[in-house]
Image (cartoon, rainbow, N blue to C red):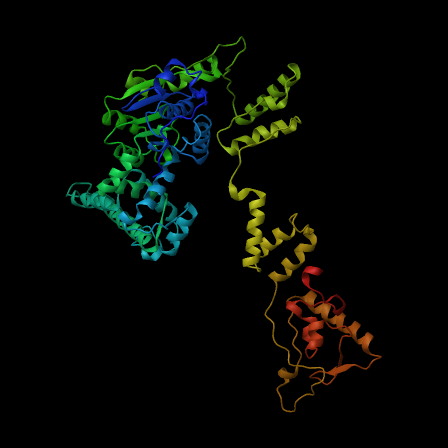
Length: 580
């Protein structure tokens, strides 16, 4: 552990991040020891308050920088918080641990890998690698119902989602197995016994698969994102010595976006701060939008139950929006059940800038989405003309990417420039599709669809008319038979007639007509030279004057000139299909 200098560096001004705080913000920043819950609405500066508290703990010498742990959810948010702390702390006193939940779990796991009986060089599987891992070990899992014979890979993604949700809810394979056994024991002889039995069978199979999946990861030396939290939590539960080292290291723990935490993450935080209880959480139940990935608002209730003496600070001064917009938003969100405003008895009605004379919120209703798009486009064109506003000052928000199409079409009909920043799916982006076509063409050259996409792309700038030729020829390529006739080899007495007959591999009537026209042209060009070859019927068959290089190096068989790659073509145009 790095030792910190305990003297203050002279001449350095007091961090100005503490200046300009409101009364409620300063109350949260200067809070002493013990649990603290900060209920911060949208735009009230909750991340700023959390950063200011880190700076205050260092500046007031309440904690050394390495004794502070701040956790958030994204690498971008952690980097921004780290940058703000660095700018507002003296040089050499800015090594507070600011990480994401999974980053913290991964660091702890690798440090205490020996205690956990694992290797510190384990590889973390991404979501795509998890699917590949399960597909490779599909028949090593005790699957019956969820591995149908017609489509064995049908439930792979659903199984991984189930295992991930189990990790988020702090449900181990052993706990899931006990739950399935309890369902089996509670079947009974009631009228719904068959339903209970089917439910028990399903969960027994899933519990066995969950346990087998966990063992496979241990045997192959890999982990997933859920394991980073679960293994760290297991360390705090089952290894008291390692847990004491972690608890003594981090004396102050701060959590950003608390409404997005799941059950396992809160349990991890509670275990980490058991001796000192110096935990600060910042969140807003009205901004919880990640329930689909395990986030639960029940953590607010769990926090109250674990720390009934916690200090509660509410931030309501919004610095982004005007009062009219905030009033309209509050009138909608107030209908949401089980809000902290009711549970804690606090006021969460945000206060913003003074309302202007203009109408800030106007609720309009239309019969269809097309009518709405047309009217929105008309309003933008009218306001831009009357008030001399730039088109870049207007914004249209939609829920899904597909909902933007009517608006884009309506704007285009009025020649209003627009930029769509929805992003779309990764594999629908043109550069990603080009990369996939390139890799597929390298891996499987016979994949005509990807070869065609690559050929007509801007990378090679091949016209679609020219690139369709080899694609069409490859679809009608027949099997080739080896020809046995030679220009100089005499016919062998007694040999089968079929063995002395030249072999022409054709696939259509057009190919046969091309052969006849080519043969007639060759006869006229070679008649004066006397270069002929005897066929099986004894008649003279002229040889072409211009043979491909491959044919000249061989015995110059007729089939080599006219039946290359299963397509009959004139000797004068015997080139590579891609050069045609």
